[in-house]
Image 1 (tube, helix red, strand yellow):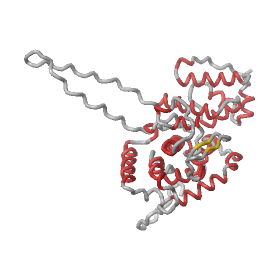
Image 2 (cartoon, helix red, strand yellow; image 1 turned 60 degrees about the vertical axis):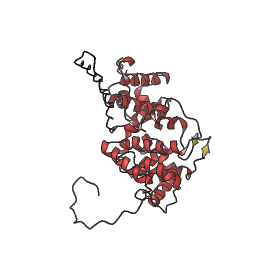
Image 3 (spheres, helix red, strand yellow; image 1 turned 90 degrees about the vertical axis):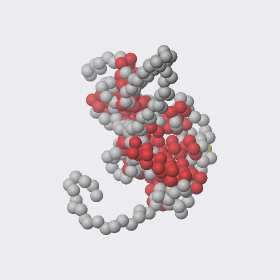
Length: 338
């Protein structure tokens, strides 16, 4: 007989509530023993039990296997996992500093206090998300940009765009519709992840829809230039619009920045996964992050034509690298990859 799980109080915080609900999902599936779940999930019984222990968040791949074996929706649960990660890693709110009382004037009348300066904007910090994402996350732009330096860099890039200078990001002769180029460059420069580039954003849009902003595929529940599914797009819209599932049609002004936010959110989850990081991101966008993490051969084989389109377009859209002066050869360093 298996060891009985320790009781959980969902009121103790988001992690406890998440684990409690995972146990409830397993209960609704008939409370199968973890050994039986392991046979379907291809993870050990101890790993699956730890996912519902309330001690730490499971990885995206383990969660997807657990939920799928119990008949749940892995995308919905991944979304929840990202929410919990955000709640656990968000910086504490600072207590407001009370304003000093104005000192009275010599005649006894209170002086008029000088207007308080506007609150300093909090630096945009990296969600070092062992996201997972897919996520990724219930994502605001501030949660995606890795640093103040990246934020300033993004502002500089947008200023260059307004001056018409986007050739450093996208080839001018590549066939990308001119009206979408500013949105594509902004989406591809939201974070300082080397693989997330305007060329990758454009390549995914090409592979998804051929830049067709009117695309509508109700059979797959996918719409717009980035083929968003409404219940997924919801979490990559600005925070004040995430309360409800959006209804198609979806404009490029919503779809393209949301694509950039999602790529930035899921990128940390795919670090270290074998293969080209950019193509892994495209594969995760088309399928799910855990599919790429687990190197699900069958699922990846099904989208091989899609990945070929992305790879071809990425090469076509990426500007030529300028010539640089020759530098002396550097000996290989053990433990590094060429």
